[in-house]
Amino acid sequence: MSSRVQVSVRVSAAPHRAFDVFTRDIALWWRPNSLFQFTPRGAGTLSFEGGVNGRLIETQTDGSVFEVGRVRVWEPGVRLAFGWTQASFSADQQTHVEVRFEAVGDETRVTVEHRGWDTVPQDHVARHHFPDGIFLRRHGEWWQVLLGSYGARMKHDGSLAVSPPTA
Figure 1 (cartoon, rainbow, N blue to C red):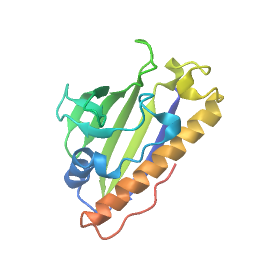
Figure 2: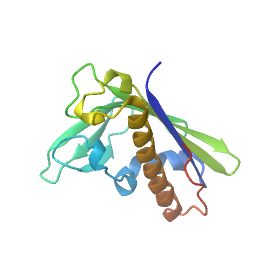
Figure 3: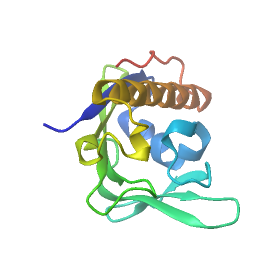
Figure 4: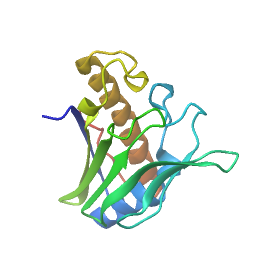
């Protein structure tokens, strides 16, 4: 079984709108974390190049671009899946993020599952030598912060209410 974290948030929006804000506005709600940087250069600006085989990229202030991962699934209002690598990963060290958008009454449950951490050894710099359980807890806490920020962006974008993220 793959090492993974799973976090959800409910937002007051239709699934298509929740998907659109998640992908289009990622630079507005994403909160960099110094423990989980993509490159040693520090945080840049994230953006999606939409559609299957598009990319999630981080653009630095100097214009250089780091490809975080390729988009594997782009189903607006339903599902998004993409690879997640850091500059320090070897070719066989890849993690994957899947985001599901599920209508629940007048809201949408947005669930992020980040899996594949078992491909990255515990002594790897990206894991900060944390044992698996502690690393996954810290990473899950960060995804909770990210979904909290995403929920706030949804609220700012016109939604009336946002339920807190759950682990």
